[in-house]
Image 1 (cartoon, rainbow, N blue to C red):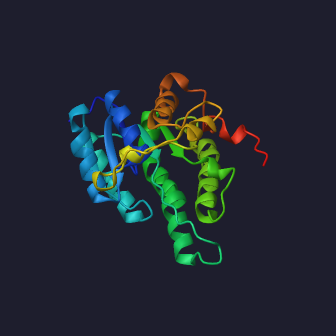
Image 2: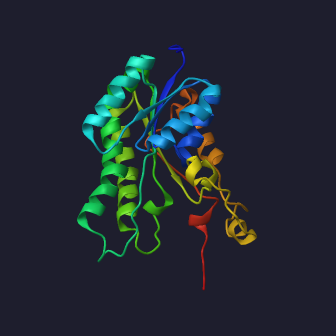
Image 3: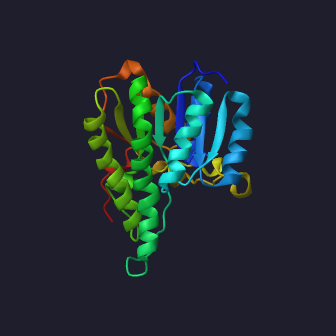
Length: 252
């Protein structure tokens, strides 16, 4: 393994946006750790992307403190350092608030928000040493909602607020920024047993002011920009990447 490259941890990196970011960082000569609860997805991603560079899957439930401690220890053992943390792991349980159980609420908050806190807490000393970055993946659902998304929306709103709190607490050595994706089509980046090509319609694309549905590269490109040391004046910020949808007035 090449310890002279910069090293990134991507939580939830076995599928979806996380996998897209992992692929892009490997192409940019990063060492990549995939922290993933789904062993099937994690092993597949490590295997399928291994030709691009140094990638290692570590099984981890980010809501569990012992798992996160082990993740950090193993990462440092493998690559010697941590430059970047991408807090991307997330789940959703969408039910009517009268049907959503407290355990389900706590599970969503635990993975999406507590997971970002734990990973940031235990990565921070290493990232500080390297003057690196943390990127939190929130969602436009932190700012707008569909029905029955209370747990997910609350967790992503928390990730947005956690971002500026961390930026103030960890600066100037660690920069912390947030990306809030809109509709990013990643069906083709699921694990093989669930992978498919989405049948997007003309209306799906046209309802976006940008003229199309988003893809994983739209997020990965911004990640690369934000973690670049040349862009060291950007911290505590949130970037909405949604093709303009949250700025579109809709009248029925």
